[in-house]
Image 1 (cartoon, helix red, strand yellow):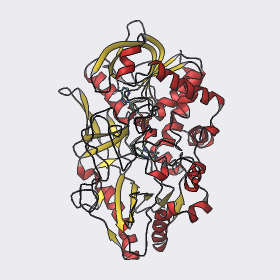
Image 2 (spheres, helix red, strand yellow; image 1 turned 180 degrees about the vertical axis):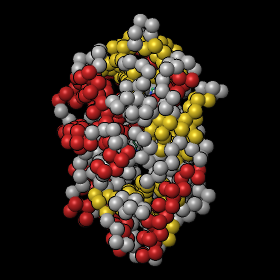
Image 3 (cartoon, protein in one colour; image 1 turned 45 degrees about the horizontal axis):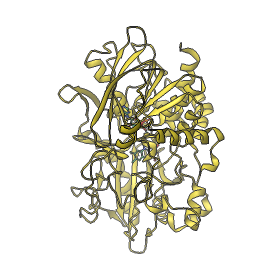
Image 4 (cartoon, rainbow, N blue to C red; image 1 turned 135 degrees about the vertical axis):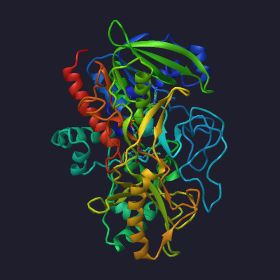
Length: 538
Ligand code: FAE
């Protein structure tokens, strides 16, 4: 898969590995203790987090010649463990799977009502986190690459009309003409070969769901992905090591996936101006009386023990810690008085992109196949249905056995919004989201899948999500908002009230996009960084 990378990206990949070898990334207790470098004290630019928004910021700053330090609270995922793999598969999770847990917390909790999915594990800075806030849990990626390490790679661009409804303040011509194409090219977005899709056993599950959708008069569409479909075809042919065809996805992919550590961040390192430090959690921000900002940063080892607390200065600060992380950093700073002039809109406008999961039981003759690729490639697109807009990703459920289940992640139009409050007792942000705020999403998904079930004489599965429920509305993969563009920031992500302080990630997007969000997060970051680098003093 590296064949598509530019020489500069390859240089960057090499640099990432070299940095790890030198201990700069502090990926393990041993390396940290042995060769911990002198901590940096100042950088002209600091980027917090290393997901999509951060990766764009780091690359564009590096290209502009700005010395930049990226601080990531998770680890660098490049070193094989004793089993020879960097990441474990979904069917054999271990400590690498989840962020400091005693037991995995997979989205699909059960099968046939049995607790056979999750496993006891030892606490470790694993790659997937589930942040539980009462009525809503949010899945996020942890490590160099953020959510790109654990997600399904689906890379759709939203309907232009809906994009403009959600972000009317953004010039859609510019986005669709310049920044979406730029983001797609950099991310490595590609399409499945339709002929292969039609013939391979690995997408039988999607073809069955398509048949049932078409029987109901619904439209299906191919969805582009950042998993290299040519690589996947080689996996199927037995000429490449299996990853998407070996049950790997939410706990990381060992091959095939173009996560941002292999694209944007590799290119950023290749500029020679960007370094990444791992296991560094930013917990505080205050203005430096001499100009710029001072961050409080906690370094941890793989047991979770804090090994160092230090202060790090910068002139420009780019927050890309994700909807939860960035919002928490700014809310804490406002509420504890270190950045008191931040907008009172920080913490508002959060949504889960209308996510609801559901599953249907098929007839015995409609087999979905023992073999299923983990990367979704098709969706039911009923977004133009004015009375019930839904875009439903046809999700795989690779269990290695025939289970006759069709799974879906429905994205619905839900106008409900949550907000974050700062909890001084735990020094953290709490998401305020009530279960009944999911009702519009569940109703919309139910409307669509009731029609499919009626037409195909099928029914829901009640054994997969706990509490006998057919609709999983208690978690999301798509947290959006908290520092909404034009509300908590100006129209380019500059935090209101403070110069040189920027938001670059999913927290800018007001709660809903109608499709999976990372291409939009990336394109918006490209747009905002282009303006910031052109206009702002450095
Ligand atoms: P994100 O990628 O979350 O990165 C934030 C980074 O900041 C993380 O690495 C954190 O560890 C780090 N961080 C947080 N707090 C701190 C701190 N205080 N100090 C230092 N570092 C910190 O942010 N989206 C799609 O478009 N297509 C899909 O198919 C898809 N599938 C998904 C499947 C799963 C299981 C999950 C969890 C998500 C999925 N998503 C998908 C959502 C997508 O990954 C998500 O929208 C983006 O990753 C968000 O990008 P950000 O740049 O906002």
